[in-house]
Image (cartoon, rainbow, N blue to C red):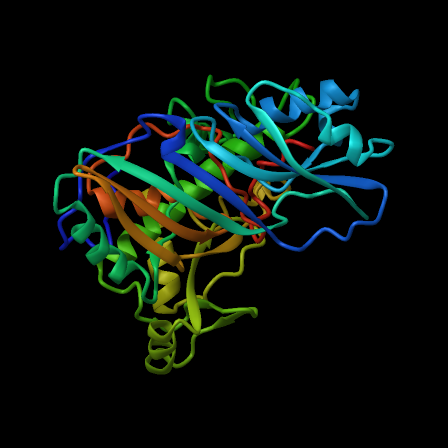
Length: 373
């Protein structure tokens, strides 16, 4: 479904994206520094034209360790130049890692650390993107859009197309699982070695419902307007329920709190029954033929949580690099999609998404993107 934009009233730059890997550069921002001591080795790795699992597999084979013992904080896009940290298990030594010579993989640093790198152990990602064919006024248009998006509440935190699979049918498969069958009509879960596949499909359904809720909230002009019963997230703190919409709306506009949306599940923190916020969520469920009890039978695989409805865009810059191309630089927190910001800037589709371009949300237990599991 088309997802509304926060800057729909501003003209986009159009253009083309990802004409070559160097047009999409991603630097992972770690959650903490390496200590220089410990049994594990943290390696800072640059890859080009590879998925994260492919890079991990190449490094693991070269060092004689299992793929699953290599830790990563998040997946990075194939069609890009990306820098991220990985961890290697003992008895691998930093010198072995620095000596690696692999196609399209460069080890930039290797330091000891006390534990394995886990999914979500990143603060965010720094993006440098090149858009081509934007016209002479492209930079001015991009600057006007970013001037809006860098003020609270930020950009709508939609899940990108990557979340829904290469064929875009993962959410439908999740809906079939709720009905007790797989997508092909067979009883769900029988014969599987584990629930990882089912968890992925159910997560896609939760993500689709979240996007539907967020699109309705934005269309109604209430992205920075609190409703009674809204579950809000204090920046740097925890969740709380809105009891004073006027006061909390002011806090939303100051960036002190963030609206959260539903990732439906048996253990999700829901707005109080009968509140305006609960009514909005019930409308989304009803439109999908579901209710708040629908996820009960899959509670182990789809626990439910809250997801920030918006994310802050920081350190954003625009630079013209020739007559019809511009460079965008910006930082997003973990779990946010660069393609969401690109939709706002381009106003046209940024092109097909790579299904491996996922950044796990460290607050989201439904996010099944850890290849080390």
